Structure formats: structure tokens, C-alpha cells
Image (tube, rainbow, N blue to C red; front, side, top):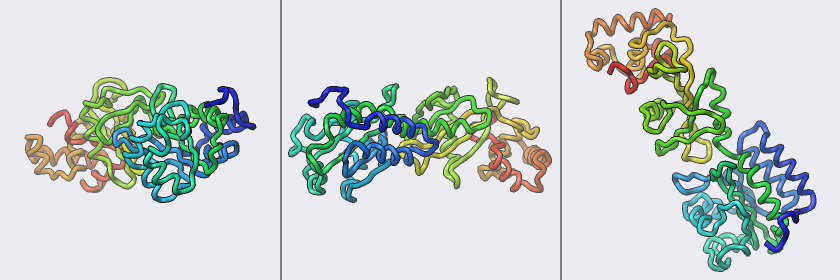
Length: 345
């Protein structure tokens, strides 16, 4: 880049310390990203910038913080074409590249000639945001109206700061914080839109959270409310099980970037089951899912009288006046086993 690795802009040390502090700010990734761009602008005179999160399943980026670009450019930045161009030009790597450093002339880069140049931009910089374990989080891009900027010294500073910025905006880090609020949580994962799973930083996983587990499809069917949150029980006979069950807690990720994340799924001890037996928890699950006493009896191959007796005991144990209220309390407190996970069906 024409400058030594330790050639940095004036006040780089102060900005680096500020970015490090912002990375641990008790705020959401969007707020941290906005604050980091404000900090970078103190030493890099850019006119527009973006911090975007990678959606590896759609091969697109979601804009976390974006400023200075017109609507056409912003729309392009969330397309697969933009993602593929970034990859082909090497802009997803850990070394910042300016337009003049790219492997092809600027005149051969369609987006540059059709979008960025007509908007008045003359130079730019892109760098991948990569976590220490090698996981690609997203991209930092800066553009200027002066071909002299970003300078080689600014590129050096961005390269030094990129891992910290990646840590600051890592969506899995924020979701790990969410998982930790579950009382007695012993394991957690993130479920993706395609049905895969991603480990959460610093948290163990669990056999019930593996990609081939029946728990994950059940989790999807029990999400979608307002808020996008659910709890239910799963028959299980190993720790942290109590009374033969563990609790699954779900936090939906809809509305969060990137879009390929579906939900946080956490495992914990079941808590107070109000004296409900395994069979009663399964019958409550059928009730929650819209079953009637007659349909439950058919599904379980037992008599209607036995189901009615179970439902009456459930009503008494939950201290509620009727079955509808029993179902509502079961949903609110996660006191049911989904029918697809019931041990006796």
C-alpha cells in the first residue's frame, strides 16, 4: 500500500482506544456500529460508509449502519450481486483494499462505474470483518470524494481495528447475552432459517440442540407470536433433567440482522412442574395445539374417560377454572410437551 505497517494517522491511538471501549458498550450492534463509524471519521475523512453483516445462506449483506449513500446504492448493497462482487474482488479479506489496490481497473467494476462514480465518489476502502476464530461476520466499507483518501496510513489503522469492529457487531455475541438470561441455562445454540445450527460464543451445546434433533423443527412450529418467544418441555433423562424433563426456551431473531438467524434455543432445568406428570404434560401439549378430549383420546389410543380424568387433574393442579385457562397458563409458563416430542405417541 506504499506505507509501512506502523504508519498510522495522527490520533490513531486515541481512536483505537475509543473503538475498543465502544466494542464493549452495553448496547445493540446497531448502536455500536454507528458509534464506531463516528469514531473512525475523526481520522478518516470519508463521505459515506457502511458496516454490513453477512447472511451466508442468502449470500447477501444486511446493512447494520449505513450513511451517505443514495437509495440506488443502498439497494444494491443488499443484493447477491454485491456480495459476489465483494468476493471476486477480495474485499472480504482481512487486509483493507482501496479501489486503486483492486485486482482489476476501476473502469471494469460495474458497480463502481454505474453507481459509485456517478454519485461523486472517487476512492474507497473495503475490509472483511472476521472474528478471531475465523468466522466471517461482515464488511466495513468507506468511500470518499477525494482520490487521496483513504490514505495508506488509514488503511493500516482500519486493518488493526477490523477484528475489534467484528467483535463489536458480531450478532452471535449479542444472542449469547440473550441466552444467558434464561434461568438455569446449561446450553444454547442459534437455529438458522435453513434448519442448521450455529454455536454461541462461550456457551456449550447439547444433544437436543444438534441439527438432527426433533427439538429444532418443533421449536420452529412454536414460534411466531408477538413477541416471538416460546417455552416448552422435552422428555429427557440426563442432566439438567428433573422429573424426566428439560425446558426449551426460544427467542425469535425475526427483525434482527442478519436475516438467516431464526431463533436462540436454550436448554435448562424444567423448574416447577406444579406436580404434573409426564402424561399430563403431554396431554396439555395436545390441548395447547388445539386438540379436544376426543381427538386426544384417539391420538393416544386411550379412552375418552381417561383423557377427561387427566384434564380434570391438570385443572386442579394448575388451580384454574377450566381447560381454556389451563392451556393459556401452560403456554405462558411452558408447562407442556409438544405432541411431536411426546414420549407416548
